[in-house]
Image (cartoon, rainbow, N blue to C red; front, side, top):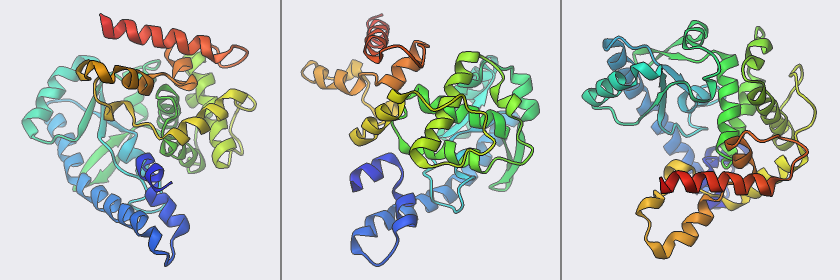
Length: 296
């Protein structure tokens, strides 16, 4: 259980809930202290990354990671991870050059706006919010855009980390009174349905308060079961896996098993219907697409 909590990034949250004098909690306490320290250490590099990009005439938007962690009730409850900065695709080469020149490495630069590319860069920037951090200012997505990003990122990556669903639950529970559900729901209808299922999943698995949330019914029955199974496996996120191209042939069977798309990831990958369709054919189709991409 301890390994699962540490691997899932939830050790600090578990310590907050369980804290006491039991020596078995010391590993959780240590994870909490380390996460809090890392959070403080990331503030200056975050401000410098924004400064470097602004000097290059680029105004990025920060999402996930730090932007999600700031919603938690105390520092150190959520690991920071990389600094996820989003810039228009046309600006990405200049942005990458500016970041390399600045020497700050923990930046995950996104060329384009990923799951939010069904809305324009102009409207994303117009709605974004500036915050003070590390002696400078950063720009984060609006509450509506960020909640949608968190929902879709969760599903795109198969909901393999419980922490990502905690992010969704916290973002919806701490949303401002003026939160505009019309903005959250706008865009690609398939993604909107997916985002609604992510919100319903936060309610059914974590007990998130969903008063006033425009759901489309309970999440598909298979979805919660698939997520519970995935959490029990404790698979590492994609970015933490060894690239399959450098795996030894003897390890290919295990490597393929680790990369087998779960039902959630497969459904998102091929934009399959969320209801009324068996998941195994969808997983086979997603696996075939992934294998074809590796071979090319």
